[in-house]
Image (cartoon, rainbow, N blue to C red):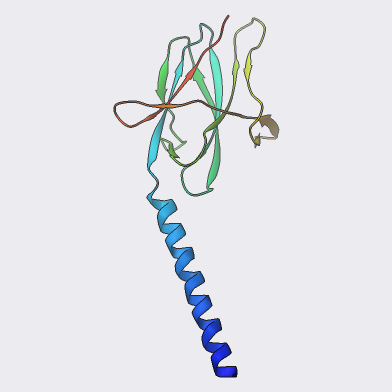
Length: 142
């Protein structure tokens, strides 16, 4: 009886390990896309990016400065382009930086602390361009 129980327990453990390995492999197989931000607002912006470059491997990066009409890939401090998992949402906090009334892109996403300040990010609508990059267009009415 004890031998049957041990065999069943061992089988269940092996099945659990196999399922875990399969889940990790499936998550690792999700495409990672480079992040490109376009400031389609007529005002300068600064942007904090909260992205996942691996399964639930979230990172904040800030501050990225964009003049009106400017766009670029988002790089980390080593100059490498940030990537985002296809099966994860992309979150950002952004605000205008000129002397006029401040506009903010915030709310509904996770709170992120950056250098002692906490920001509430928002889920960004993205598209995929012909190069396979994830593109965010930040627009404003002012």
